[in-house]
Length: 257
Length: 209
Image (cartoon, rainbow over all chains, first blue to last red; front, side, top):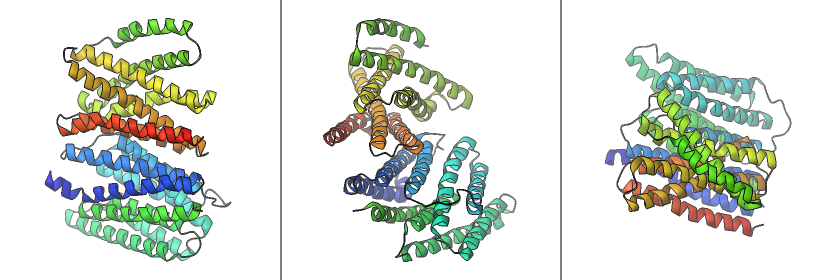
């Protein structure tokens, strides 16, 4: 139990942060004159909180068991859908719905879902969450594109990074054990470097609408969390938690009085 | 083995007859109560099928799959009512409470037939916890839809969100009560505490009208 509690501290931290942000987002609904985005944000935090609670309770009650398809998987998928709905509730402006960037995002999400299936063999769970994750990533990329948040060189670097990640993780199924460790470490470092780059870009964007860059950072960190294990998983989970207050602040800035 | 269909028929016939003598709100409530009982039976069929098809085992199916199936079954008639008739908030709440109460009553009766009726204290705890839990979960679902509609935020994602919230609530309850001890005490208390919070939320929502 004590080991389980120690290993679960990042989830407890996230639960505490989510509970505080949920209370703040309920207040934001009133303050913002009942803005749709504030309602969506409240839904996101409520759902995320319950999903975490379900996971923690399961882990404490059955520390050695592997969870079958359960309500928290549906909760995770719903969080992605709500995050996408929250983003689309802001006026993104007119533009093509489909372009090579969104095609790339969908391909990346598909590749990720394929890797999850290969790792866990849980087809239904992974494809179900993968579909919602793809919708979320496509919405984030579309928002970044329509807002002109990234330069051409940055788009190319992002595409190259995503390709390398998928390639690196796919190769781990075919190479010897020693090489697997090296490939994993390389991917983790690439994910961490990507998270730092997104964070610098999001937090240095004083003008315009940093919301989209914070969304991109959150999307990257969630991807990193799903792609990692052990201590790296905990690290990216903490990073994900650290993204939540800036997300609230960015939404408040958009809808606030 | 319980012949749940026979139990349903015995319970439904007097209620169906009562429908002819009732009007307006009372008729709506009884009809939804019947729908809730039917949803419970259908949910048991689906859970049984998933148990047989997946090989999870009866206990794990009850803990992990049943919340998803049961909340889905309760959601379907409400979604139909919501989309086809565009009811007022109060009508929707009455429908949700009726479905939840019918579902919980039928489940409690089947459980009593299966486990016996000797221990009044156990039956009281189960009746209070399960009865309140089903009403709370379906009420939370409908409250999510009402809030989304009121703030013009009703989309597919809002519906999935409301449904997921009720599934998670039900799932957490099932997980907590699956083992004896402190966790099951917390689990049995959770629906009553949440019911209190939801009551306050509803009062505030009505006060804001």
